[in-house]
Image (cartoon, rainbow, N blue to C red):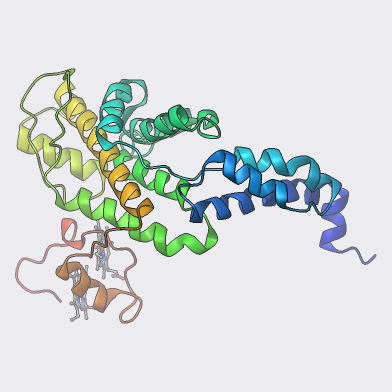
Length: 286
Ligand code: HEC
Ligand code: HEC
């Protein structure tokens, strides 16, 4: 058998060339992540100082750097919340949370935010694709955190910020957002979901409010919850951008469950969701 390396095969298919292009994007993103307040113009100047290694690099790098600057810039939570409320009918919860933030950045910064295909976020409706799984508000907030902290080395930061969202969602009485002009004007009950799941969160609310899960009241509740989620993620991202990220810890109970069942002990359970929304022990735990 001829001795052909993986690199030769990739090169002959032209794959190395395109991965060089992607690597250009990755580098610019990693560098822009540390400087959240850097403007697009500044990062373009920095790129101009680099000496290009190859003709391919020289051709693609300036534009790749300019169009991949996904750094977050602090936004006004109230304005984003109202926008999320307004666009909710166009695409439901995840779309409105994610879209409101990206649209505000597109307004203030332009590219690359203007070109983000926010329509894709419609998959996060009624959980994921109608499955009632993770709530689109949690998913939309987390997708934004993922966009602004996408590096391989940013995992800890990502998980810390996502924990802020999940713990807020599980433990706060929601929604309390009051729109300027409510699409449906009624007293929306606020409930604690104890769960990041759409099925549990909506179900808990419907039971407390005495509303039909398929009715317009439940939709109005989710619309306000989306607005509030957009405000929450903006607040979390602003605090982080200002160098004051808030650290939120799990409840002592979840800590105790994980101490025994997590990776350092019994190793029979993964994840950090609120355990007691699914496991309840009437009297004694085995
Ligand atoms: C002091 C250690 C300890 C703590 C704290 C603890 N567990 Fe357990 N748990 C065990 C042991 C030991 C078993 C039996 C072996 C097994 O099934 O893993 C068990 C069993 C279970 C089971 C399987 C039950 C069944 O009927 O098969 C579940 C579910 C569970 N625990 C959930 C929890 C949750 C939720 C918490 C927190 C509220 C918790 N555990 C806290 C030690 C602990
Ligand atoms: C969304 C519901 C849900 C949540 C939240 C949840 N679990 Fe479970 N868990 C399940 C289901 C379903 C099973 C599988 C059926 C069963 O064993 O009861 C399970 C199984 C388990 C088991 C038994 C595993 C085995 O090998 O027998 C343990 C232990 C456990 N969970 C611990 C936890 C802990 C600790 C938490 C919180 C950090 C947690 N679970 C959160 C639904 C949940």
